[in-house]
Amino acid sequence: MKKLVLSLILVVSLITVSMAQTQEEISPQRKQAIDSLALEKVRDLSKYISIIGNKDTPWSEAQRVIERATELFMEGSEIGVSSLSRPDVNYYKVREYFDRLMQLNYDRVNIEWYKIQYVSDLERQPDGSYVGVITIYQRFQGYDREKGLVYEDTTKKDITVYVKRKETQIGGRLIGFWDVMLGDIRVKETSK
Amino acid sequence: MRNESCRMKNGTLSFFILFFMTTWTGNAQTTIGTISSDETVFYAQTKQMNQFFRRFNGEEDAAGKRLYSGDPGYHDLKARRKFINILFDNQSPLITSDQKYVFTEEVLNKKTPYLLDFHGKDWFAELSTVFLYKKEKINIILYLKLEKQNDGYKWVFSNAWCDRFSRYFNHIGDTTNLKYFLHPMSHEVDFMNMHKIFQDDQNIDYYLEDHYIPDQLALFVMLVKDEALKFVSVNNLKFHIFQVPNWYFEVSYFNRNTYNSGWLISNLVRVNEKEKKELLKQYRNSSP
Image (cartoon, rainbow over all chains, first blue to last red; front, side):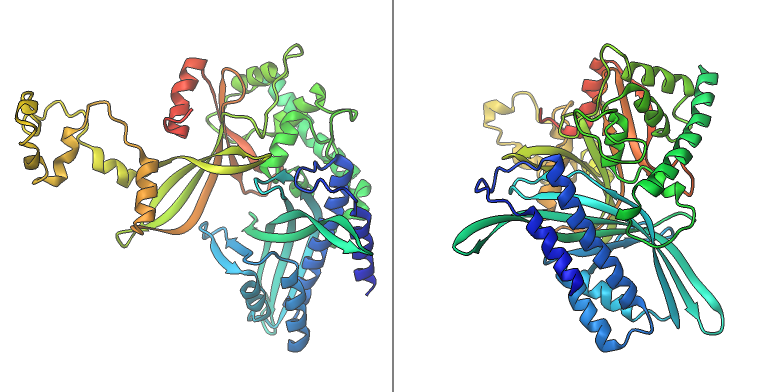
């Protein structure tokens, strides 16, 4: 609930009354506000991934979190995964990726996120919306009850972020705001 | 010059360690994760091409913060020198320290420093892809460039290359051929002899003009539309940049656990503008 309120505050802080919807430029100040909103979504995603991957999470709770996580994404988004031994990319629908994460065959998993992050510029697309990429790094460890740590990797996740100008009616007035959605994610294993 | 390069390399390491410490405290409130182990490698890594452009142009500060026009340090030549030095793959046998030195001096010329332009012309992505063709996996190189549409941009195919396609044209310019040709008076008989050449369809390419350059992109589109080519996967990606006068360089991704990783200059060649024009033909077919 607290998070929802925080997100709402962020969205409201981005609200402008401009009607020049399609041609609006994003100033550096607005870019910073949008970056914060996008990072908030990425933070949510990383939290959800940790919960989904956690073996102690009950099945029903994991399903609920998968729903929440899927809602962060544009429809049709995919996760493209490659590893050091297999450079070509395997594609998974977002939902499928989370389902696979939940069903991983380890007795315990440990998913942690590095503090480093990189947020690209926002580039305007021909349809007037904007797109950027946020890079984060994740460490994954899979444990077997008897053998201990049996798998470990660190992956670089390049997350597409779409930023669209939208409008909503509040009290009879048309209010414009920037909406942020996640898109395709490229997952690359990093060198050890 | 070599001593200069060595001095710059040592400087780079301390540049990153010092700046990483700055970032660590400076960005503490915007962190995503929880791991507090050594992350200097990821910090130093040029994580996106976007960051390659920013670092090359001096559009981010030592702590990785985006700089905009008017900010102190924006396009600062001293900072750019340090950044450009770390943007080279320092294991590349294709780049000599002398080349690197001359390139850096020319790019950072005080009177006319050169910047890379993300939206500018003369840079291309080269994407290695895998397709299924006649039940066999084949590699196709796709060249892409950024194109403006409305007020936005999009990547478009500028050319394609496939070894398999080239085989269809291996008889072009074959001067030893004394058998497959249309005789010079064929026009007087309304090319009625034309039907003979199509009875031997595998030799049709003998009848093309000797300097004909096949349009591989057209072939690619036709085969995709005819469903003869089925996409399998993207593979390796690199970039070719021609924006600095008298230089061409290639940027590739280096996935390794060192400070010198991420998107880095993997090849650097001095080319005059005439040579550049020739080279560009490979990337953009015949379009301007």
